[in-house]
Image (cartoon, rainbow, N blue to C red; front, side, top):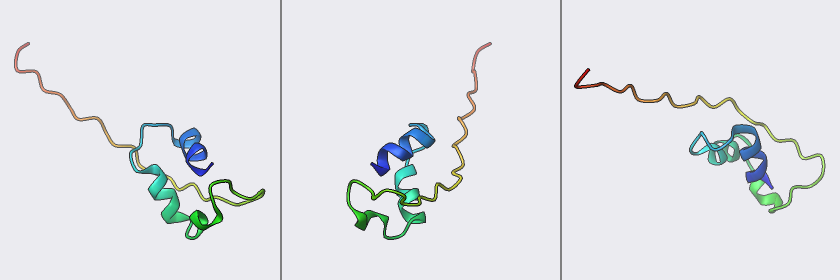
Length: 59
């Protein structure tokens, strides 16, 4: 359930988002795969990686 929440919030554009959320919410993994009702989850701001600048060798 947590992985779906993370996917809905961050999408698939940030690698390691689930691990970052788990680190921000110590002990949440011990609650099991289905989180109890009213479980608070902290979703930290994660910087999105910038795309590499491409350089054209020929114009």
